[in-house]
Amino acid sequence: MKQAHFALRRARRTLSQGGVVAYPTEAVYGLGCDPLDDDAVGRLLEMKGRPVHKGLILIAAEFSQLLPFIESPCADGLQLLRESWPGPVTWVVAARPELPFWLRGNHATVAVRVTGHPLAAALCRAFGGALVSTSANPAGLPPARSPLAVRRYFGEQVNQILHGATGGLRKPTEIRSLADGRVLRPA
Image (cartoon, rainbow, N blue to C red; front, side):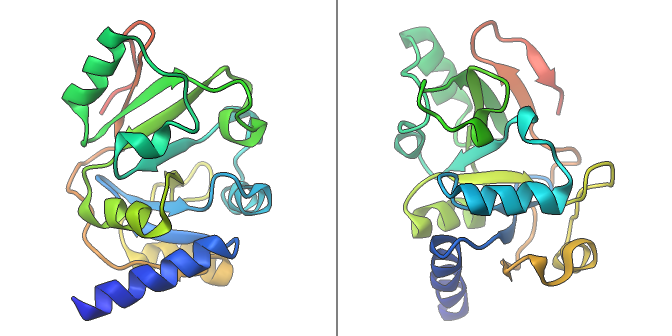
């Protein structure tokens, strides 16, 4: 327990200083950084070979951590979110107009999730807000499912790896559109 607390404190410091942290999520290891640090996000995108126009997913420990990034959903939309969170469903929702391009890409929306993974949620709580969350793999390669796989892909480019088990899902989380309920990426 003491070791986990120390690792989370160190991760908070790493994220606050513009670093990239790898951590287990519901299905795979993810890479995360401070979503409002354009240098950190740029470095993460470069590590993955991911173009900025695609946008990114944000994860949070609770819905309130997503409010600075999204427009308030209607009552029906809010009900859908509450029914699926915390859990392995990522929703594409209307982004606040001032949301940086590096988070939303070429979209007026942003993908968000209140994670049900205990360590990923603890990381968001330690950081004090939502984090960028993208699978830990270079574009075109399978996502990392262990700390060793993260190191093999990225070496020392990752500033810290939080060790823990993934949530056991076989595929990355489902992505759905809040506007019309369409499944954009099946689980």
